[in-house]
Length: 303
Image 1 (cartoon, rainbow, N blue to C red):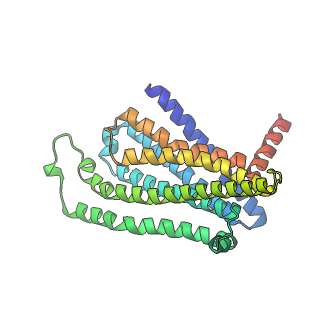
Image 2: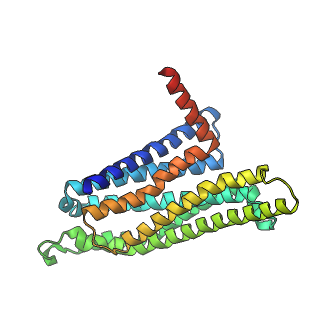
Image 3: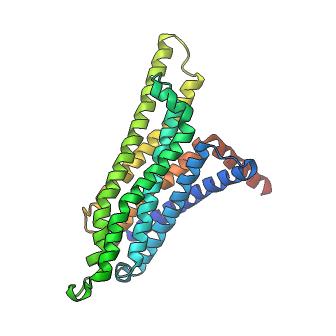
């Protein structure tokens, strides 16, 4: 069972690294030629880069843990992987959230003045909102980290520890005990925004289709196709976002006692969202899909 889940995790990690790496290279190649990067491409690049690094951290952490769980938990490596995973995970989730908001604002056709205003300024505002979201999390996470390292200097816990308890297990978890609710809070906010954006696209599509039916017009107009083109990947993204969010709540809440197998299954569920979403983006984004088909044709011609 462990070997089976390990193979699944390795395949999933490979898909995530290849998919997100492809998006970074494709958009980077386009940027080198044009020297311009539109807001959508900027959000895609930031999302793919954070996920690429996140998957490397996850794989490296998994390897270090399976190699020697005792050494892993009893060293500063535990904290390094923990902090890296936390910040990169929050970054990837918020990049995905604001990318969804960008698609929602651009596609929906509500007549409300707020939506009209946002539609014309989404390209400028959304990247700024992303930066403010990440900055807010970093600022909120600094106090417990500073307190932890300050206490670590002045307290010698080694003499008070039970025989088989590592120093990281006894003291290192203090900082993550405080940071886990903070992660949950920011993840829940991002999830709520993502869910709202998806519902707004559905509502806009329903109103638009109803308007066409009343006017006895065909439902295959450009606006309907744009709605459907965004809605399909958005619903898939939302499904895997829910899985990822649920797995995060269970993992950070320490609901179960984790061994090697449980940790591996948790990592599989957590990695499914960034790996599958990257594949979805490649096949639903016209620019990425066109480049992918071009590369396939070049490969067939060379063979």
